[in-house]
Image (cartoon, rainbow, N blue to C red; front, top):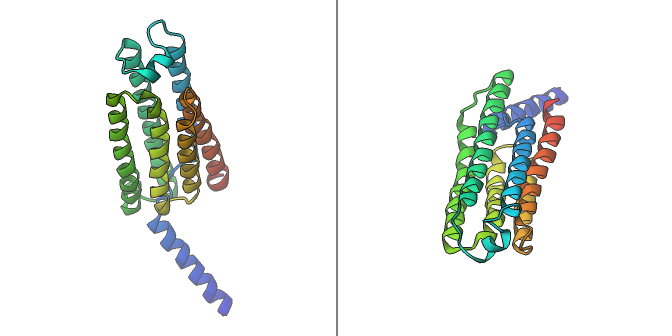
Length: 206
């Protein structure tokens, strides 16, 4: 009887945790987001290093508005839109598979706690750009993204906390490594997302 009682308590606890945590995140989203980021970084690398009008050293030393810099922004936005679109698709699909709501209170808490650091970080990156601190833009995105993941991790898989710590750490490393910001950005948003997504898929979805 005591074993049955403990089993019932364990099941109730499991149900309560599921209802209070957003569990519809898909590992495949992370893998594809990482691939998008690597493609975006490859394109950005071509624009920065193989251009007669935009050189990375110039970007580090002065504010420079050019056609190529505009394409860099388009590249970044395209990666973001693809990643978000893929996330919405796979999250909805996984939620339907498990018979849970995609947009419930736990999902709202995750989005809110993600968006606060991301919005602040986005504004900070814009300020860096207007002040001419171009070399700090990539590190800043990693740092604030990492903080956003850490902030939201308490409402979803705890594994996200570790990804957030790694992203923030890479951002700090990029601050100390002028000229390697794009490479470290690709490592954080590209490689680490692929690794994280694969781990999440094999750990929770297989």
